Every structure is written in C-alpha cells, then in structure tokens.
Length: 333
Image (tube, rainbow, N blue to C red):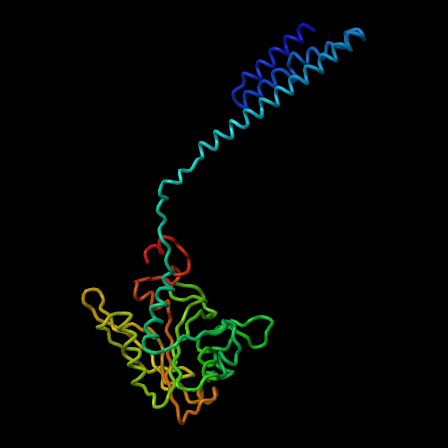
C-alpha cells in the first residue's frame, strides 16, 4: 500500500510537470502502461489473501480515479496552450498590404474578336448570334448548298446523334439565314461564334474554330461596297498602309465569289500577300430562299476566321497554342 501511495504521488507530480501533450502521453505510458509499476502491483494481487486483495483493489481504483482526473485536467490545459500557440504562429497581419496578384485579361482570341467587332460596329453593322447546334435547313438549304454537296457528308460535317438533320454548324452563315428570314432590308449584321468541322488537328486546322461573318443587304449594293468594307477592315486591323486584292473563287451562297488577300512586308524587305477571308455577292437564290426579292435587293457577305487574324497579327505559328491554355503563351498577350 505504501508503494501505491508513493506511485500515486510520483504520477501526479509527473502529470503536473508535463509541458507538452507528447510529454503527457509519455507519463500515461510510464505509470499505467503494460510495463508500468501499476501493472506489476495488479499482477501481485493474486498472491494476497481475500481481505488484503479487497483493500488493494479499492486502493487501485482510487489511484486510477485520481490519475485520470489529474490527467484529463492537464490535457485540457496543454491542448488549449497548443491551440493558442498554433493560432499565434498562423496569425495574419491584416494591416500589411497583400501580395500583388497579376490582373487577368481576356484570352487572345477574345481580344481579337472584340477588336474585329468594334471595326464593323463602327461601320454601322450590328451583332447577331444564333445556336451552335443548327438545322440542315439554315446551315445548308437556305444557303444554296444542295443535298449532294460534299460539305454535307459526314467526313466534313459533324451531325448530332439522335436528331434528324441537326448539325454542329459548319460556319456562322446560318445566323445570316435566320436574320434574312426574319428581317426586312436594309440588313447589316456581323455574326461571331464557334463553328465545327470534322478536321484533324494540326498546326493550321482544328475541329473547333471561330468566325465572324458579315452580311449587308440593301438596294443597289455592288462589289465596290464589298471591297471598300474589307479594305477598311484590313487597314484597321493590320495597318493603314495595307492593301487587299480579290481573287476569283467559288462559294455556293455567293456569286461572284472571291478569296481576299492582304498585303504584308516580310523579312528582308520582301512584299507578299496573305489570304485572310472569303467573300462575295449574295447569290440571288439565297435571297429568294430567305424571302427577299433579288430584283429589288442585292447584298454582299464575307467570312473571317478569328484564329487566322490572331495568328497573322501576333505571329502565332501553331493554332493549337490558342487552345492549350499554356500560361507561358497566354502571358504574352
């Protein structure tokens, strides 16, 4: 019994002396663990007489209660001290100015698209938008693209599974169809948005790309109006000294049609031309399909790839860089 009293005094003193939670846990193991003096005293009870065993059992229970009460009280003290210490270490000085975070900015394609739209809005065009999942009627039929045209094959066009004759629009021209079937001339719109083709990805092609298409329909519109509009656009986007040239081409929805090149000055003083868009006079069949009298009205249309303009203006050699979200590339613009 004297040994148990001494053990209790030592245990309570050790609990009080513990300065950290780890120290307190070591005290618990030392005084109540499997190899502790307490365990040895408990094992010796089997050699005692019944009366002595009863008294020893009561003393052991009193020891455990005193030890546990002291242990719990000290644990709460040390736990509170540890929490205060951690909070002090993690304190934030809110009076200090924050670290400078670089401001965000629009993606290069968004920047170029907005600049292009600003040019055309300044000429009097308004912006029109339409759905990206489009019916074949708006995407093909009203644009004079016949049912057997190669562009309507699945190798070129992405069809929406489960729907009859619904495609991911191959150009933004369906927006022009929608505008012409719901509006009376004069019409002057530009139609920005994503378009989709069944193209393999490489340095110059992507199955998803962006366009801005323009449409102007009114009385007495002719090719000179188209050329003047595109020249003003080219000079606004590429420089006041730029020139354009129109080369004969073919598109089902324009007649005559043209590919449009813009002049540039290359390394070593070399001069050349770069193709930037396709354009032409709206085919009379398209006007008729959309409910506009081709004998009274005429118009022009053009389509410009936003990625194409961005790559030309900023010397981007691989179209994939515009979509891969590489922070090193994005930081340049």
